[in-house]
Length: 225
Image (cartoon, rainbow, N blue to C red; front, side, top):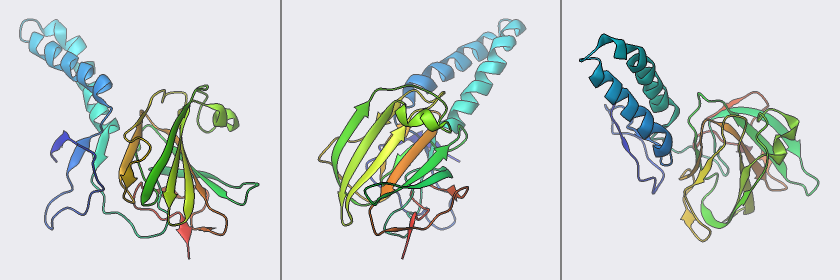
């Protein structure tokens, strides 16, 4: 399964028949992945001089393999639906908001794909970074965590999406600026090592998922007819 850098300029369609989907390394992973890979390469080369270097090479190679897994970014066949999940993970909560919107919170574990995707096609109207804490994303106080708040102008009106950092995920990497047009399912950003992504469905849009349900970014439909 080939792995290569990804430009992340558009949503990806299905892989040609008979071929496995191509997997790329997420944009924004370089500060973590490159030093780990370099350490693994150097320590592995030094084992030729002395077997003692294996004590460093083995864990370095294992960590590099873990980084490849953590920062994988597979191509996806974009699902059908007005609103699709921006994140891989599990639906943590579904909450009615005072203004009539419904918040669908998806918890991302460190084993999930960390690249987030646009829930609808439209235009990015704002991308706001808000400083905060780093409590675990499943904690009720995680709403005060470090986060990036997105607003999209779509056919359903304004759609808000919030990327929330957690105890491990302490860096959110937006891929786009305000004014950018996006396709549904297009990559919009990365949360390093997981955490949580909230999507606010407009008033009148019924939720199509349940708490505890697994979601796939760009594939799972969050609403229903």
